[in-house]
Image 1 (cartoon, rainbow, N blue to C red):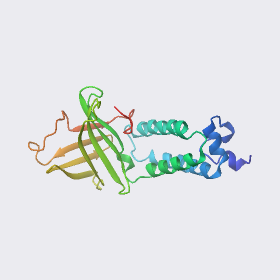
Image 2: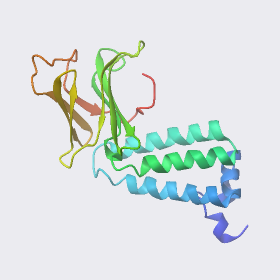
Image 3: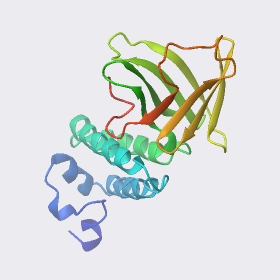
Image 4: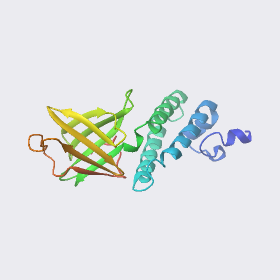
Length: 201
């Protein structure tokens, strides 16, 4: 094994232990994708300078790695597709807004917003749930691009609403609070660094 192939992946191939790591190191194209994901992950950590963004992104990356290993194992075709999806996620123009944002207590008496990428619009998809979400109760659903001020404006059943994104927080508001009230206790949601928006509550 040459020196270049030892470090072609984002990890040391001489220490590859799992069938997935060995498959990555044995396939130059996958090894190159692994290195790209490693660099994209490093770049993504700088999107928010403070707060719990880095903790969320690290937890989300660990979950992706576990899923990659469990689903792809040493299947090179599966790994290629998985890495390409991961790169699209880490390079998404609205990546810094992704996550699970909670108001109240979850699980228990509260609500949460899941913010995920929307493709191919390069925007976000937002779902508001009651927690615990045993029945899949969706109170609100929208998608769109966040403007340069960190806001997403949308119409919902004749109500003008907006989401304001800040570091680790989202504020949900409506132009007419009386007519457009939702059954939520709070309109301010905080990012939960321990939870992925791809998890079931």
